[in-house]
Image 1 (cartoon, rainbow, N blue to C red):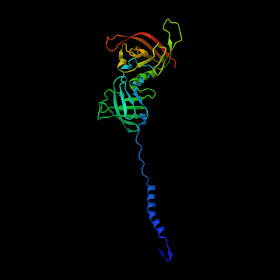
Image 2: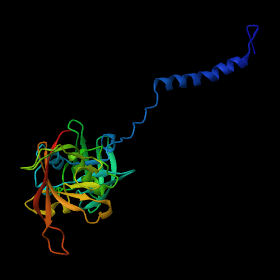
Image 3: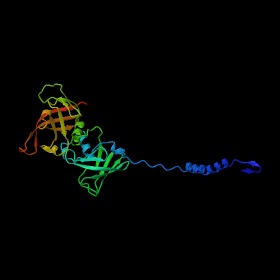
Image 4: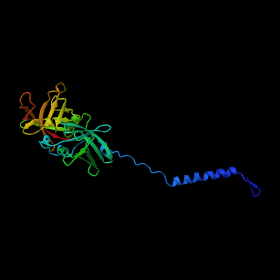
Length: 279
């Protein structure tokens, strides 16, 4: 192409004209970047803890003075497993299966067996660390409504989680107090969080039952139940009663007064020992 006697390269002009719209589009795109998609909620404040126990029961178990009627307090557990599964237990008693769905960073919906189509709601309060549980409808069906987490409780076998919670409460080193009239002899007892013990005889393990149907086997007078177990005789453990007042643990022998073939019904017998916690 010739203009005013000058030859002009039309190829360059054509390329420049074609590039103008592309440059304009690029400029507009830079001025209006695409909105980033919000991250899906994870409810990690809840799900990072695998074991939750009802707060009123927890508070009673970890009080300075443990009530002798602990077995009669309502107790519930939420045990979270992989994916979307949660077990709801009545602590060493009934167990139900639930499927949960994350609804926000601090809430879940749980489809509970027996309440199909009406999910329970779970809400975590960051200020208090309490997990609030609400069954569908206005009634709570007697189910505990507030839970606290315990990360150091082995809940792999969830039917023993409450026993492990009791072990955590009682674990420590104790000095044995001599009985009246006995010479003062320094003796030690050690109860460990893993259930092993030293000083309570030739038993391999101790199992405090702070809750559940079996925990109410002691009837006269009401006391908390503990089984002392030999591995070779696991089906026939020795039942004892226990009581905590401050740093002092008392243990009594028991006698089964139930009829043969019935569930045990224990009566508190002679005092087995008094143990003062040192650490």
